Length: 163
Image (cartoon, rainbow, N blue to C red; front, top):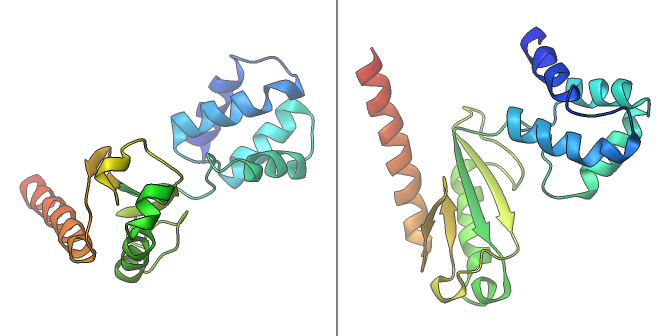
């Protein structure tokens, strides 16, 4: 908690106390910490002299901000028109079934975060999933399990090497 407060205080040094800086501050905190924590909301409200409700109101309006810590691996399922027509909703449902989370959430073991995006600009490859910035085009339902197992296996291997 102290370390988080230090990071946030350092970020505030880049900004003046002006409500117009709310979105840039939220963006900077998310970029540095990975999400907007309850403590972050409190600190921002105190710094800008606004209510926590105002901070939540703005942050929750924009889908770019998240209120939970991200997982070790980020999974983004494109739901743009081309991907949707090719079955991306089914791909999303399969990720939800395997990971037991909804979009915007992180698995209990902090391994995976699941998100949806409107379009990634790779329509010819749809349906597409972005796994840790690696594009996986022409996704199929059976590929969901394969991807999850691949990343879990890599993690287990890393842990064994670190011992």
